[in-house]
Length: 458
Ligand code: 4AD
Ligand code: MG
Image (cartoon, rainbow, N blue to C red; front, side):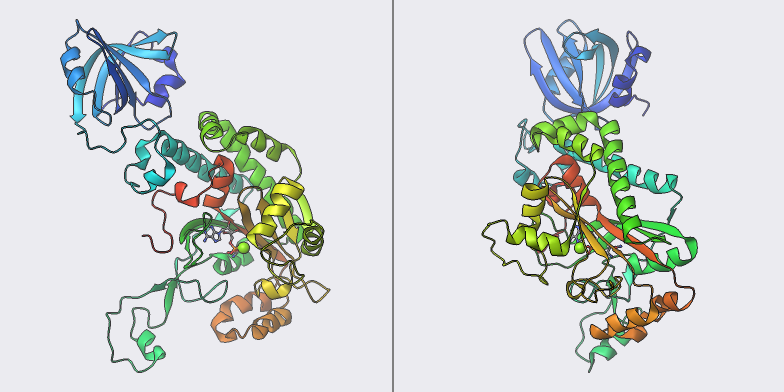
């Protein structure tokens, strides 16, 4: 169907003004009086609607009168003219109805609550809110690829089906083609009979395979879906989320922190450049002061604090926390919230966590207690990045695995990277939906995904 995107029309109106143009879209609102009809048409290419004006004397008046229902799909050919109120609008229109929209279409009001919209995910893309969200999500994804591409990283695709358990047990979705049977006597027998002849799961992270790729390609990143069967029913956890994981050789914790900060500022700047209308919309609808916040983020240094100092700050805060603050315990959401929202009031890298609460692959610090790891915490959202320098020493890595009762034989290929030309290397994981929450000011991860998957909800 030959037609012009409404975005294109508003982007270079001089090409179209006083000319005939065809647009297609859905009726957002319509007003009719005896002598004139106004229709606001939106095609999803931008937040703006094009206003169609149809006068009583025109042939299209009768068609327009019957196609005023919100949600009706139209194809319209008319003349673009300048207008004081709308910038540009269309007159002298011919209208074809592509699809009628009966009155049980649920999106009749101008504003619906996000809670209500979650019950009709199939219609959410027809709303301004989700048009804006998917525009930002799209530009953010593009900016992520752009950053790594411009900095010489190779995009590698790590497997989604995996036999290894990257971060530790308990959070993985199993993958099976086995029908239910009672004939298997042991777990081993059951898995041996399955598609891969062994237990298989959906990956929680591409990191281990990413490290293997980086240990030949130098610097890589992955950007794909990962899956976590976390039972935490919070506004920040999804069972399926998109994960960006760079892995960089010849790079220590200090270097990777610099990269992470540069990267976050770059992608935010790109979204500010490409999505000004969408951000203005979220500034109104999701978080007052959003644009000011983002401007401050890209123009100031992020804070840095060691875990040990963070614990002191929390202890001295005179706050009543539900979970006691103690060196060695993981920081809870309320602790992170105090650090970001009340103490630092900006993004903060918390570094050098106790080894006991972090993963086996993290580089052990000389103090014997902590690891060269950092989480990037941001106001309003909490953790958006998990990051570490990796343990490059074969013996130390094996010790850490033994301490955690991990089966070394299952990690033979990973361990081999430390045997054959081991190098200092570091990486991080950023959750796309978490940074999207931060950039849009939206407080629930369910409103950043087309079809959010959370515990109890598919
Ligand atoms: O901190 P995490 O678990 O780190 C890793 O997976 C490492 N392998 C990353 C690496 O070093 N390559 O997860 C990284 C990020 C978190 O900071 C968070 O942004 C996001 O992934 N994330 C989730 N996002 C949405 N829903 C969930 N259930 C998430 N779990 C983690
Ligand atoms: Mg983490």
